[in-house]
Length: 372
Image 1 (cartoon, rainbow, N blue to C red):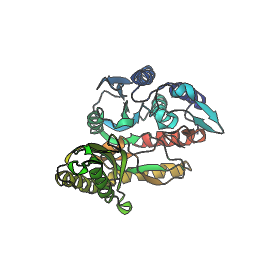
Image 2 (cartoon, rainbow, N blue to C red):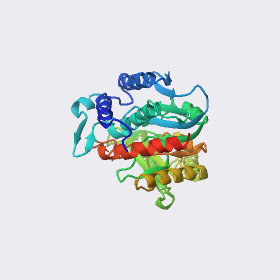
Image 3 (spheres, helix red, strand yellow):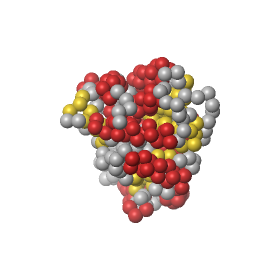
Image 4 (spheres, one colour):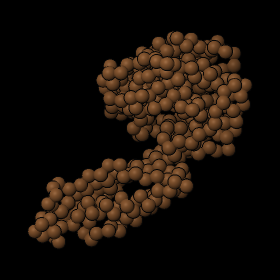
């Protein structure tokens, strides 16, 4: 079953991949948004651009109905992690059945799935009411778009996230919650050789923090803390006055996130060294995505449709986050990984499996018809 023009799809994908749209490169994100705005409007869909902050590109809210309620919300993002100039260094190419290029599967091809789904439904009698939400800054945490995503999802019966299927073909119904904590430590400088006793070492305090926070990591519970960025001191012969450590947190449950937050609060109130001043900023940025009973029912629908198409896959949990974390935490049935199959995201080897396009697009269309 061939529901779309694969060659035209690949031409559109080449065009999009060859536009630099790293989150901070606003003009590039704007070009991608303009492409989708123009293409959806040609199909008669309603398109609204949201300019939430000048530091990021526009977000797009696209729908095929004037109703404020939707059968399905299709969720995607137009930004990538790659800086300006990447597309000219390694433009779109296809080799051995794989398409390569910055953002080819994370997630410009997934966004194109939404557009080509709209084209399919131009010719169908049974059409679900759909809202397409394209974020402009998902790769940096969706700070300005989160409320809009949640407000739009609240009007939707189901959410389908068009992030890529895993390299093994699996779909996603569970993602870890993500947090970021920055700890700034202020001690007291002194000459390390002449009068070290008059100093208070910020880096010594920092070392204690790293060891103590890392004790919270628990693979069995899916909790991981990583001291990813560490700075401190000015010279080897000076007792360091200042130090900073930035922790990345990944958790499977809200309870674990609360435990981590309480630990940071406790250590801030009870530093290891007298005279130390501590400032802790940050916290949870994406809640955990765990399948509810309604999500599991939606998963079963996908499995039944996939069986008729002879598509085999399993549901998979992943440590990376998506905007689906927000919608799942609201209790709205949310499934993820419904874009093309691919892998090596965020790397020079990022690829999309061209052979997966037809099967995965057909799976999406059949599911959308079922949800109408």
